[in-house]
Length: 312
Image (cartoon, one colour):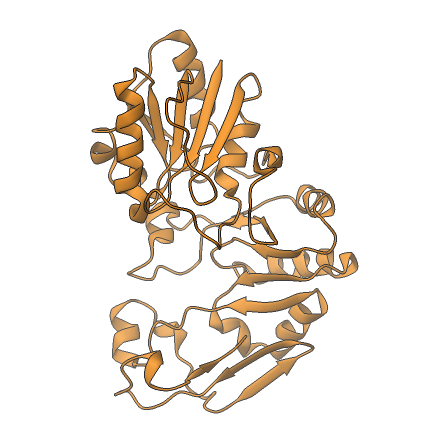
């Protein structure tokens, strides 16, 4: 059977900063009996007249309108469409107006059940993924990315979930209080298979979940001599020795969400822990891992009005 995987863009155009979506590689790895075609609209157009046996799409809120247009086109040609991702998880009944089935939550487990039902000719409308299932059977097929014009960075995932519950963030709504990491041996084997000179980027929403897990990861990464980056919460900067360990393990830069310097705003969004109080004007350099925070008064309205955060 032929399976088409699609990542829609905001519209029918290409993006110069496209990176390989891990979700599509995970779906491909868990459909070994299918002839899989993958179209990433950020890197290439979806071919007109494509008629596989089944289409699966990963949909974000900002790509939902475009995803629905593509899905409606396939369904008009008699091709069933299934959707998963954040938007169908949060608004499954909306997505079902444009899809034959939706996966709510993580794909692993639910995706395999969906394929069995599809082959038997009786798709359910919704399939619930297990957002607390161990990541011991993490699989990804990167062959589907070959030949696409992606940015020169390799994405990897170690864990899912975040220990914080910021009011504006989708992560806690999706995963709840669940914090899971993959077994290190599988992660290291995957990293070892990636091009040696490429920058790695951990797509984990916050690499600083449990400190014990992070330390184990850093110990494992250090001998590999790889250059990598990640998203991480600002409280990591309160531990000088941990910053040193990050740099020693190959971390070149980090992405941190400040959101606001206004204490009342941080309190309102359930992110009071993000305060940078006590670090005014401090410039830290840890073996190439650099950050500078220069907070202003609470009347500061936007980052555009003053260089209050310098490069990481």
